[in-house]
Amino acid sequence: MANLKEIRNRIASVSSTMQITSAMKMVSAAKLKKAQDAITAMRPYADKLTELLQSLSASLDGDSGSKFSDNREVLKVLVVAITSNRGLAGAFNSNILKQCSVLIDETYAEKQVDFVAIGKKANDYLSKKSTVLANHSDIYEDLTFDKVAVIAEDLMEKFTSGEYDRIDIVYNKFKNAATQIVMTEQFLPIVPIEGAEGSSGDYIFEPSKVEIVEQLIPKSLKTQLYKGVRDSFASEHGARMTAMHKATDNATELRDQLKLTYNKARQAAITNEILEIVGGAEALNN
Figure 1 (cartoon, helix red, strand yellow):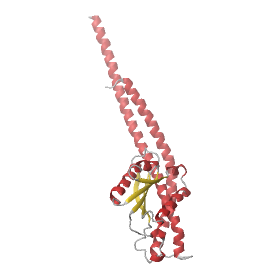
Figure 2 (cartoon, helix red, strand yellow; figure 1 turned 90 degrees about the horizontal axis):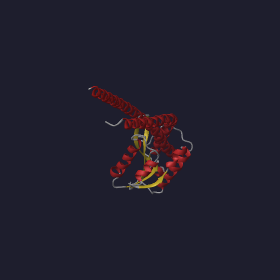
Figure 3 (cartoon, one colour; figure 1 turned 60 degrees about the horizontal axis):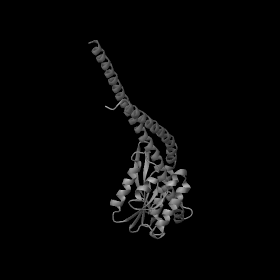
Figure 4 (cartoon, one colour; figure 1 turned 90 degrees about the vertical axis):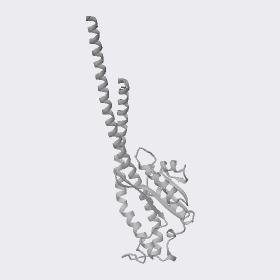
């Protein structure tokens, strides 16, 4: 059994760790509320805008179709991997990196797959496996639509110029603090809604449908990417809060076990001292 000093040192170490994880949990909980409100507020708008643009794109004839809907043979793929800059968030980052590995090794096994990293963890891992064209890890310092829009414009340029035939986004979709869903969404070309061809719903177009689509599609794509980053941002804080909550519980349990061990060892030491004193007294009496 470890001596009393070693056990006391372990108790102090575990207690210090518990204070850190508890503080990190509270910080993430505070940040989560703001991030959750932001993604919850924008998600209906982003989803409806995407649905509208997909429906309109599907109803256009081939000659007037958008350049963002150009389906060509997929030879070169660009994947936008969205992770965090820091760890201590459970499987939040590893799930995204595993999905990126699946895209490289299985989904696009015979294709050229390059990456754009949003988050330091994605850049550090993917730069060892593939080509990372850009790393936007600084975006989280001040997350705004305008900053994400610049990234989206660059992605659109790479697609329309023919540099890449398909662009995907991989990110964690926020469901609740304990659950994040790994999503792989096709960013470009735009995916028409099945059954929407020839039907544009109850809409009156002014100016023409083609002009509206050409103007709104870039905005829709920027919003789609921003929604993915916002989803990932909220998921990060939810995952970290959950991970730190579990870590605090585990540290508390370990500390209690160490205290019990310490008390048992201390009691045994006291008993041995009493026995030695009694034994010595008996020897003197005899």
